[in-house]
Length: 197
Image (cartoon, rainbow, N blue to C red):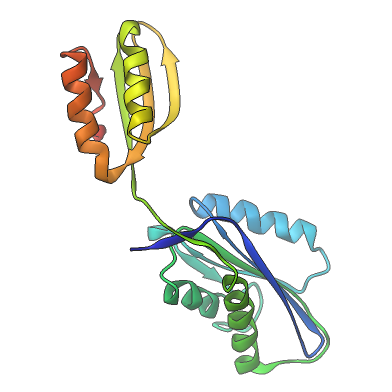
């Protein structure tokens, strides 16, 4: 089962005068990861490189940010894969110390920075979620909210028009049973978006 992190973890290494500041944190997708990387570049304008690796399903990627190809992002990605992580971003900010490390030295430095950060990480099971969308009459909104809450779901969007439209996420493992329960409880007065079923 893939794991994620309960919270961000960090480490810092000093190797032949170069400073490597690593952070591994949970992220939802590539867009969120790119925001974090951009913020790091702003926070560390004097850094030589801000390398990163993302494991997020079909959005996984690695970036060497000017380091020789394959010496930073890819090794960081392999550390994440080896630890069976998913939905995480690893970043390493490097301040160049004036001494070249060579390709092997760079691979070791970036790998060690990420691995050291992960030593203190609290890993948690990653639960696959499903997004559901439905509409109910106003009189059934309370029932719908209670059922979603009881199933451990999370409301994403609620809008009130002729009917109450609700978008929510729930663990994939309980989604089908929740849909059946709601159909029974609402006695035909619930409409589901096609992609929800």
